[in-house]
Length: 168
Ligand code: NI
Image (cartoon, rainbow, N blue to C red):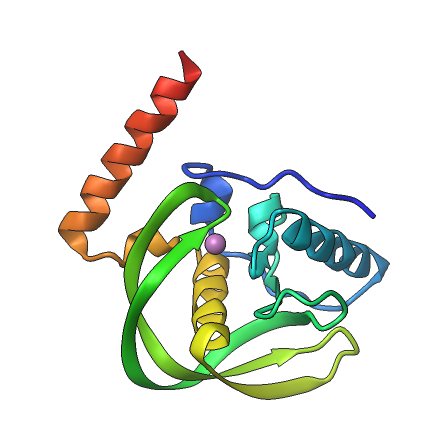
């Protein structure tokens, strides 16, 4: 068991599009185990690989936070989306910051499982939100990039100020 440090905004790895996983080796399996440990330890409902500094297209999720029931996806893509809903969202890489974000109500996610099977999963509610949030991470976006142009800029300014205060 290893809990990895979570990379925080404005680290560059969070803004970088992650690389596709070509094959799932022992290295990826260990990374996924550590990501799951880290997600539970940090009380998150999802975690993308670049949030622990690894720029690979992998995320883990656990909407109900029950150990053993977590989802692991490689090379995920959202293939279909329906409806719109605005709800509060947060992120382990943007601590102590919550804002309402407009997302799709229902999404279909196509990805490879840990066993190397390609699956398509339909999600609603919190799980649909997690899928969109994590795929965004893997594409180099944070939820604060989804707040609309003006609010996004203000938020970045506010967060940068807060970070520089912490340094002094
Ligand atoms: Ni996040």
